Length: 202
Image 1 (cartoon, rainbow, N blue to C red):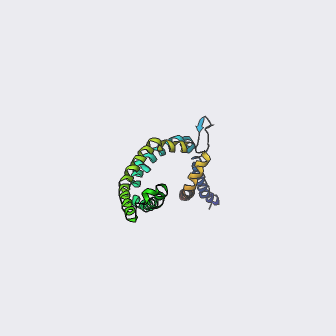
Image 2: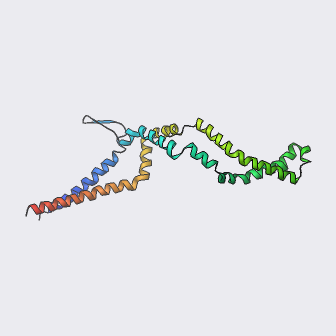
Image 3: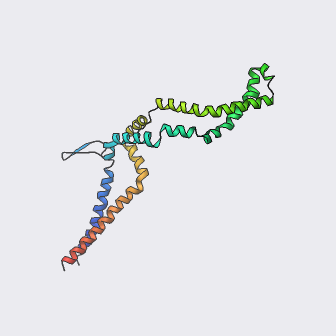
């Protein structure tokens, strides 16, 4: 048996791993365009960063974080109900303490029963008013904030190092798997080559 045949799977495994490793590195490197043998080479993410930013900005503003969804969540009755105890406490403090300090003459004619009635009226009115105020606030906010533009600017201004750091933190395991898979596939191809060589040389 030719023992050098054992080297074939080893070399094939190395080539499989190395080519996948190079492919992953080329997602981020080179950072800037380089001319190699007449070809302009640049990492995929640095080259497509602006397009990536624009698509991400559009996705965020249209699908992931629309003002309509935010407004719907804010004006949801269950969310407003969570605010009411704090509002109730504030109104009661105003009627019992601040009103007495600011307008002592009026407070002399307002007893606990009247305060309770006034508070009840205010609370009912606020339940109706809150959704309207929040809707109007979100309309004004939408006019002032362009989510798509904000995301595009932020992602476009990411340094290539920062972008690589973020993606590697998210996909490190997947990238490692791709590298190992390249080695395994290379090894299998090498074994098949050895088997074919042995069968054809008998």
